[in-house]
Length: 421
Ligand code: UD1
Image (tube, rainbow, N blue to C red):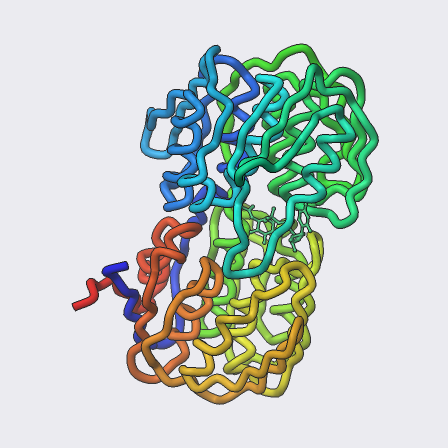
């Protein structure tokens, strides 16, 4: 809370940047899944973002040993005598703590996990997690702010999700791998992070088929064995660099990611005028002129990811023309537009929609990051603003980006971390 990011526009971006491992959206889930296999799991390509520290606290509270065994390598010892409880003080700092529910139930037959609250992007219910685990034979109730779950043995079941929730798919998948018999998850989330999690579980000896499609089939096994595994590259960080190139102009290469993970973003940015192509190890992008406005609606993968919504609003804020942006995944993700408007943007939000009227140039101002992607969007807006933009509360940005300022500087941007006087 004592720092800020100071951004000054410095013209087009140039150079090559390598994306980090997808620690926030894939790594935290695989750390939770490591609880399924007694012994030492090794995860590589893990970068120390702030949310990771909270998950480390959760795992320690549960009784697992956690240790950095290399610069990007984490070893998790899921000891025999786990204490299946995730305390409120950690869960309230990290919603993804809920991902320990499935693995703890499967491994210990019980779990006590503090009920996470809402956050800055919406209410974020857990009904699908609950219904799915109940279908598999678990008893769940919320008592004094804790989810108390127990089961004699989890049994495979057919679960149809009302919405392809990422978190619910992950919790059900990580419970099903040790359940008795077959589980089918219909309308499963198809995000690449789910595919990465399933591949990790299969390496441990699980039988998961269909990850990346809407139907995931799991044949339960008796036990899982710890393995060493490498996290996928962070597609959201990669998309953030693409958007940075779009707003600042220039020509960049992004290594360590796959075009296949960013197809819809690339299509939409292409319509706006950004040129993007595949390289042997990632992407190349170039922006020559002012971008053109297009309409965007967020959807579960492979649709336009909600994580990119604040970023694309920042781009549209300086694009030529008027755009309508619709948020279909979270119910209140537009609070950040008031901050963007402080920089001279012309964005009007009503419910799930925002009308963005592009202006030629933004004007630097002190603004506040309200969540991780909204914070990144304000940093990007600063790349196209006159004068100095100060992004306060940068700890939100640090939750998901290992060093956004440093990475952008390596592409020629001027983003500096400074202390608040
Ligand atoms: C994850 C990602 C987040 C991403 C989101 C959607 C992490 C740490 N977070 O969040 O970055 O934006 O996926 O791609 O990986 N819902 C219910 N009932 C449930 C579960 C979810 O109504 O039981 C609703 C939520 O309130 C939300 C929507 O479904 O409106 C999507 O949530 P979900 O896909 O579960 O997102 P998360 O896993 O929380």
